[in-house]
Structure formats: C-alpha cells, structure tokens
Length: 256
Length: 294
Image (tube, rainbow over all chains, first blue to last red; front, side):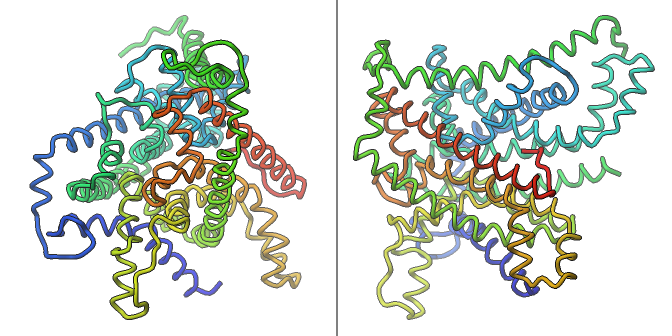
C-alpha cells in the first residue's frame, strides 16, 4: 500500500466516524430548530439548555452512573484479575468463562438477563439496577486489561516480598496496586466510555425514576429532538477532549 | 499507618475469591439461568411468567413472520459485518504499522465519539441521510442529481448506522492480531519471492484469522440487537431481532417468547464461539500466534 492510500484510508474512516459529531456541533450553534439548514449563528440553545431540567437531570444521571460504574468496575475487576492470576480455587475456569461470556454477549442478551434477574428479585428499576448492570458489563474489560499487565510481571518481586514476610494484602497494597496503576486507570477510562455509550442495557434496566440521557433522547425522537441535545453533545465532546488531555498528562507523569 | 499482619493473608485471599465467584454467580450465572427458565414458562399477564412447562415460546420463534425477521436480521447484520471487516481490516493494518504514540492517539480518536452516546450519534446520522439531509442537499445543490435520493428509512441507512456504531469493535481485535504478527514472517516471504497477493493469502490472512473471527463475533450478533438503529434509521418496521425482543419484553410483555428469542441468540453465539476456537487452533497448528487475551 502506498503512503497516499494509507493516509486517504485513515482520513475517510475518521470523516465517517466524526461526521455525525460535526453535525451535532454545528447545529448547536444553528439558529434553525430543525438542523437541516444553516440559518445563522446563535447561542440561544446554550441558554435554553439551562432551563431544560429534564435534559440536565438525565445528563447528570448518565455522568453519575458512568463515574460510579467505572470506579466500582475498576476496583472489583482488579481484584478479579488478581484472583484469576494468582490464586487457585474451585470454579476458576467457570469464573473466567463467565467473564468471557459477558464480554462476547450481544448487549440485548445481557439486557434481558439483567431485567429478568431484577424483576425476579423484586428490585425497583432505577439507580441501583442501572449501576449493577453497568458495573457487570464493564468488568470483563477491566479484568482483561489488568490481567494482561499482571502476566508481564516479574514473579520474583512477589516471591521476594513473600520471603520478607509480607502478607497477601500487604503485597497487593504495596507492590501490585502501584505497579498496576496504568492498566487500572486505562480500564477505568474504557469502562467510563462504554457506560456513557450504552443504550440497549440502560433502556431495559432503568425506570422513569432514573432516566439517563439516551433514554431521554430516545423518547424525544418520535416527537422531535430538541436542539438542546446538540448542545449537550457538544459539551460532552469538549469534556471528553479535556479529560483525555488531563488523563494523558497524569499517565505520563506516573510513568516517568 | 500500621496494618495488622496476622491472619489477614487467608482472609484477603478468601475475600477476593468470594467476591469474584459471588458477583459472577449473582450477576451472570443466575440471570442466564432465569432467562432459560422463563423461556419454557407460560406467559401470564399478572405475573409475567408462570409454571406449567411449555415450549410455546420456541414454537413461536419458528413461526413464519418471526422467521422472516430472523432472516432479515441475519442478512442486515451479515452485510454490516462484511462492511465492518472490509473497512476495518485495512484500517487496523495501517493503524498497527504506526509508531506507538501515533497509534495510541488514533485509537483514542476512534473511541472519543463514544462519549457522545451512540443513540445521539445515530440521531445525527439521520440528519445526514434524510431527504433534506446534508448528503442530498449537497448533491442536489451541486447539480449531480436532480431529485433527492431516498436513503433514510431504507435497509441501506440501517447498514450505514450499524457499521458506524460497530466499526471500532471490529478494529480492536484486528489490531491485536496485527500487533502480534511478526514482521520477520512477512519479510522472509518477501525475500523468498512472494508477491503482495501471495503474502496476503499465505501469511497475513491465516495469521490474523483469530482477529477476523473475533471481530466478526463482536459485530455480527450485537448488530442483530441494535433496535435503536433500526428505529431511527429504518423507520417503524421491525427490521432487527432486537426490535422484536424489545417489543416482547417492554410492550407486549410476553416474557417467555422474548426469552426464547434471547436463548436462540445465545445458541448462535455458542456456535460462533466454536468457530472461533477452531480458528485459534488452526493458527496455533500453523506455528504462529497464541491468543490468551480474549
């Protein structure tokens, strides 16, 4: 493949991936409500967004769930990776198969299984059911990421610690945790991203008490999506770019 | 800070193992067992599903109308998967050849749109493909066509949407395969006089087979479940399996039937996983890669 062909391919794929985002960003400044034609620059949708309580609430819910689910998944997933890497126990094979199934399952299959579980347990659909479901679908990605780094470790380090009389918890806290930090952070970011992106699982496991952004927007599609959504999308893009810059600076500092 | 040293060794280990097994039993094994159970129960308007054991749910799946949905889903997902592969394969190849820092930047750029939820992006796709959308406006405006082309609410739009949402999931496993591929093999074959086509079919393609199968697996079945893509871009028709399942669960509330559909999907997944295992074994026998991460 020639250089020009390669560059062209990269360009075309990224145009495809970013075209819808560009439409949202441009329309957030568009005077027109319907977003098909440019009819002049305006900040009015930005002002209107602050009065749209339902949308703001849904946005906050999405961010809250993504943050909590990513944090919990990063913690639980790290411990799971450790268990699978370091310990021998019954049903270990079953545990890694279960994680593999979650990773490979279509979202709709997971969504149904969560819904059936929560209804069988008599749980009210809302914050907790949403959080539990999101943690669970993020877990395998954390385990895979952290496990990959664990495998690259020098076991002698752990053996030395053991010889010095450090117990398992101490070893985890003083040696493994600091060393695993890069992969834990990376898997946190991936979990946060997957949680924010999710539509299918959220639409099955949450109720009217705890609406998240995609559900809110989905209910608007039939009657017409309000332009404030474009503003939210633009803000999300801005936040994502800023956080990535902060994140990469943090990681660089850690690795030095 | 001092931490008590005695007796914690066992309990930390125990805690970690119990957490692992407990979480997976409650959130993965139990839910799937419940779906399997529901699929052979009788629908009930009050309790959703009640006991007398019946296979009616599965018999309904076999009904001609749903069979049609099944085949239409298979067809749409199949085409979407093929396009994901055709775009994703060369894209992943080019990505894998970049220096590490640039590769990371490009991968992050690929994932960044995820933050703007996929439903919102699909809605934006609607603005691009519509009759008065950007593509039509540009084509009519520049005089290439006279009347706008109908793209929205067609199978074409659904495929564009599916490929758009799922492409990154095809690229990631392919990237992993290309990264493991040693350059020496390709160079050796070049030294031995293999041309581009030969190198592709004898080295690249067989050694990236696990990545191809993994990518197709991660794209093909989920594509059948993407009800919102079909809703937004395909119109109000029940184009995908996901639309039927969602309808059965959230509107009609025939849970056994919906569960039977879900189990059917799981069985198909098992079949594809088996193919994946075969592909892996094939590559290992060729003396190439090992695949432990997936």
